[in-house]
Length: 146
Image 1 (cartoon, one colour):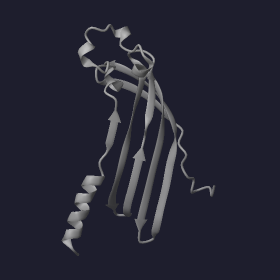
Image 2 (cartoon, rainbow, N blue to C red):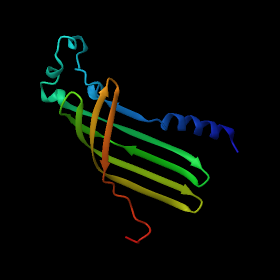
Image 3 (cartoon, helix red, strand yellow):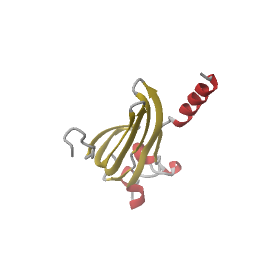
Image 4 (cartoon, rainbow, N blue to C red):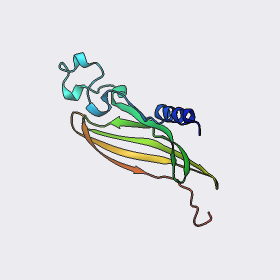
């Protein structure tokens, strides 16, 4: 076997199998976007406009790996949008999508799992929060024949 192929596969997997997460700065901290004005504003005055109350974020995570069952490729995406009701409490909606593919000597298997979700997030203190989330996911049922 060619060792160059293995080194190439390891380098590509390290580059591709990374998770990407993105949120606006004030999603978790509840701080206004302009940090210079933070001390001048009262807490109740921080989120006067609708744009200051909207939060958004999500995650995209592609990857692949080799296991004892075969080669696995997956991609997961979870965008979300929320509305800040108070300085501490945010509610929102999101979408969930996950694709997995397994390829081995017996053939190829793939599935998609997807669906909407809702969440409630309570900020305990700076950079820490509690979150409750409900997801309604559609997953293929291979056992009942449907």
